[in-house]
Image (cartoon, rainbow, N blue to C red):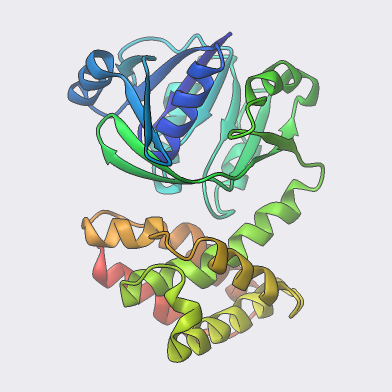
Length: 290
């Protein structure tokens, strides 16, 4: 089976590594020739609990060759989807999009292809170099199929390893909403305060700030207070993790603040709801990582 992975960040390398390990023929599509050459020469190395293993997928810059894979995992940040979509128009592959937030759903629903899914990734991964990453937390990939359900059945056996499982979610929109709530409460605050996830629980002032953000999020989404316990549980389980938004801020890269908080602000505007704290967070993160 031929698998394409677009985007060699932490999540892209995670999928390329484990799918190649499971027996697929993987091609990872990079932004630059330099990174493609690095991966072609040295492979992709995964550090899991101090044990390092390397797999050797093919690697080429996106656009250098036609995409002829059976399945393509799109692992770029949400703000780069618009740059990737033109490369997908001439292929009939089945697509799995692995972005945070929910702002990209309208784009996916307008695609001409017949087989499209979203993946909600609950693994922790941290990119170390152009061809290596640390698998910081084992989780599950939850697959929500927008169109072409039967076409994705052949993909599922590649996720049999206990450290890289998959779960097909019938109510995938609910799963996306749940992850959106968690991301909105944790990522911007960790980026603003420059702390690891768990500090939002142990620092009383930061904990109160997270609860205030949560209140505005569920106000926009018409959700219940019971969601708070899930947010705290995720924060507790990922206590030692550095959020991807904090990493982006530290490196001066564009963040996914518009994909997460920006989506909530658009929903609030449609409903004429005032959410000043969410607006403050969006502008604060944009100021830190323009």
